[in-house]
Image (cartoon, rainbow, N blue to C red; front, side, top):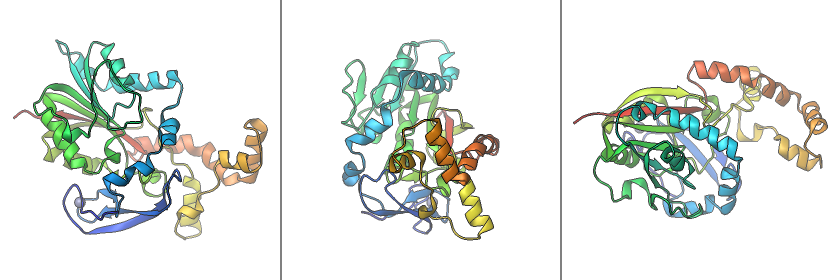
Length: 322
Ligand SMILES: [Zn+2]
């Protein structure tokens, strides 16, 4: 483990916000999420060193994470591609660098729309890509040092890295003036991220808000154009928000990791129930507060998107000239 200063402002003064174990239970240990007193950036501190991260990314992680149906992925890629339309509309063939491209399907989706594509992927667990260039290293280390891309994308990547500032700097270095840097990260100004233990700790190491993102961008030669909360690319619903309010507002006690109610899949497993209507009803009867929590969740989500407090945000930044 290592203790670090704030990646955005360099301050060593921060306040502990919450503690929790590895959310997926791959490896024992308890982690503390802190908030920088100076700039508000959130981060895991102390944290596993880069070389130690392998144990938090076992094979199951990639299986759990990427085995979904094709229709789901195509919907996602179409939503992601929308953010690149301002570039696409301009004349000439456009080039994209997709950071954290996994099995390469998003770059392929963009190539089918006429883009020249390249990718960056450090994970050896994903299938080898042979039909376009992929740099098998961290973005800051790739051997490209000129502004050659019209767009750089990073979908749910920056929260995983050990040095986000180096990523912002490199993205700026390789993006053409007037080009776009589009990235999606969880929103630190959300109940899900700050209060409900829904961040994928310790795979998520950094927690950004619109304010801290704006500052990263300003320091690296970008201007923030839009911050789009929600959007359906990835979701982070505020599960157990009702339990949180009951505990903190009615009972006036802190909401801790131990207060999280048993999730439906675990309930089914413990009671040997086959997923279905009956099993769902049994779960609702056993956990009425959870049933109410989930029933009202769509309303809360709508409010959060309007108030910019939803759990996920996509940022579009323009590379400045000169
Ligand atoms: Zn700071």
